[in-house]
Image 1 (cartoon, rainbow over the protein chains, first blue to last red):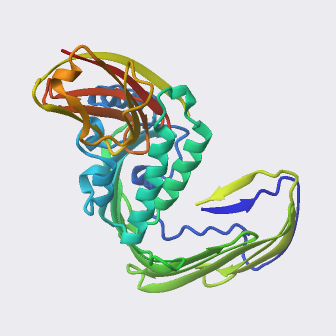
Image 2: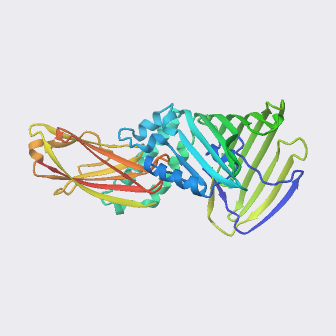
Image 3: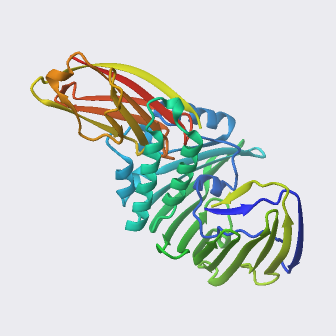
Length: 317
Length: 118
């Protein structure tokens, strides 16, 4: 888990940018966490997560009447008494366990947008080393929880241990994920009709002893209904690599993405580097530079110093 | 992080001439820790993960109460369901299961269960 000092006070940024934006994102190769919301191009304020068929029914009625979003994993509607933490760790094809359905409705002018999607992990493999670290962390949590009086549990320590466990679990050695979504639209004078659909496939390989992710993301989306044929389909094939390194005072992340627009038969690439160096507590030197997908106005560079007033730390995943 | 508690009592019949063994299984891919102690004992008989813990001969257990505390942390982002199974080899009923839920990931659920041996 990377830690980055929060600049709570003043920042002096020296920006030399040919692009319109100084914001640098390092998540171009990530899968959408909730495909239905991505297709709708909305970020719901809250997402209902029903945990039983009955709660799902109520949530669906609520979302249908008032607009909103839900997300649920059918496999876990039923308790799995014999399915232990170890079983889950060893499960290399967790399609059912991770099959999550998302759905959302939203009003746009006089139209209603309805989207539904799914996401699942096809393959999830932890290396022997990664599994051993996760099991060691689990053992630590078991020890913290083994108190006869529940009030004696050190909840802060448990919380920290759980965060570390989440961090270790996120380092899957090989991961393949699939997602899809479908959107429809209805209005006062037209019945519900499909307008847009999309699917994503993501493959990620993370070597054990090197801070590098090798990622391939394939995306295909298409429009239906009254859309000009030229604007109907789009298919992208992205591949790239993330590299990140962190020590006590220094943090650097680099991402390279090559994007092939299959429909337009064109290729683009993107490169971004973000580095932070803590000169002393409260003072951080920052540097960001890169090149965006666009053919022109695509280079950005930011150098600066941040002066922090807070000693809190923000965590970047 | 919230802590939720539930207390239960279970009556168990044991096979007198056989050793009774206890195994505790935490389901739903959650993580739990246990403390097992006879009500009149100073020291815990078992702590942590419990698998085939020898409680003694059935005839020696009759009339005793075993107190088991199981604290389960919700580490499974897919569900807030909590489920624990207490399996007594040479006990009747052999398996006792409790289900419940926590409100959010990272919450803890505590089952405090007393098993009376008959």
